[in-house]
Image (tube, rainbow, N blue to C red):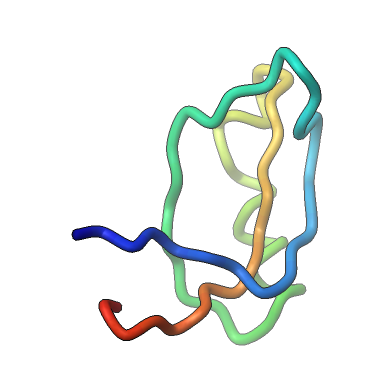
Length: 64
């Protein structure tokens, strides 16, 4: 069973959330810290079409 990638904190870029929002995918990347992860996220194609990105550290779980 895939337990997902729960996050312990997050930051957002672009338009995220709201009643018309839907998640269309996710990526797992390695970064030194949140600032580095946000710098990587700024190149996400979703931002180019008015979408948004949430970035957060993945929580370790027993199944991960």
